Amino acid sequence: MTDGLGDGDPRMAEKIVSGARYGAGMADADTRIDSLKDDIRALSYSVLDLQAKASAHDAKFAEILVTLDAHGAKLDSHDRRFDQVDARFDRVDARFDRVDERLDQVDARFDQVGARLGQIDARLAEVLARIPAGPTSESSR
Image 1: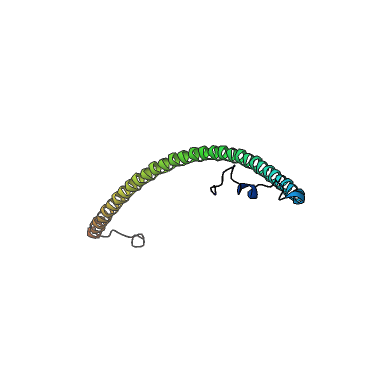
Image 2: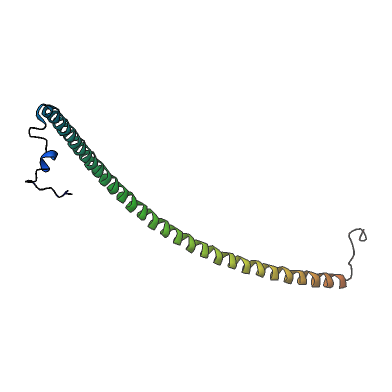
C-alpha cells in the first residue's frame, strides 16, 4: 500500500524516523524499534512453539488413526463372524421348523391311530355286548 510518495520525495522524510527533525527523540524511536523487535521475536518463538505442538498433535492423531484402523479391522472381523453365526442360526432355525413340521405330522398320525383305536374299542364293546354272559364264579358254587 503506497501513498504516492517516492524515496526522493521531500514529504517522505516526514515518514522516515531519521533526519534533523527527530534529533533528540531518536532514542525513543530506537527504544520502540527494539521493543517491536523483541515483540516480533517473542511472536516468532510463540509461532515456533505452536508449530511444535501442532506437529506433536499431528503425530498423536496419526497414532490414534492407526489404532482406530486396527480396531476397525477387528470390528469388521467380528462383524463377519457374527454374520456367519447368524447364517448358522438361520440354518438351525430352518431345521427346527422342519422337525416341528415332522412332529406335527407324527402328532396327526397319532391322532389318526387314536381315532382308529377308538373305533376298534367301540366295535370290541359291541362284540362283547353280543356275547352272552357266561357263568360267574359265584353261580358255579
